[in-house]
Image 1 (spheres, helix red, strand yellow):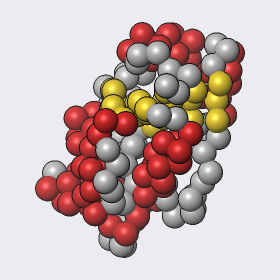
Image 2 (cartoon, rainbow, N blue to C red; image 1 turned 135 degrees about the vertical axis):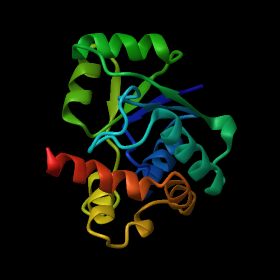
Image 3 (cartoon, helix red, strand yellow; image 1 turned 60 degrees about the horizontal axis):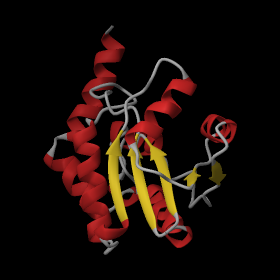
Length: 174
């Protein structure tokens, strides 16, 4: 069985992430979805907790009828150095064969460890980025179309819109 890892912060999980999961599952039998920076929340670039992000991913994958027997979500915190982070990930995630990433640093550190890295085809990268989702929330523009319906619903339930806006307002008043 071929096993893969897909790492992201998912702040929030958007349609580009969903497309990446779908793509990865065409290449592997099983996928570990790693919620990076799991210790970070309630910050401008990291407004959601690890638990909230896990719920977003779970709800989005279930809504998209991606069988739960094909994936697992694992939170992994940041580390003081990149090599320590790779070791932390490797000790937190069961054995895997390949990492899916387009991030140059992620690609480098895993290749240095002798781990195969595959790029993920971007799906409308200009639109589908968590930064763009958060920016649209701030600008009171449509952001809901950029995320799975289940994620939009969960962000609303969590008052994620208010949280994202308050993070920026707090930064501006400092």
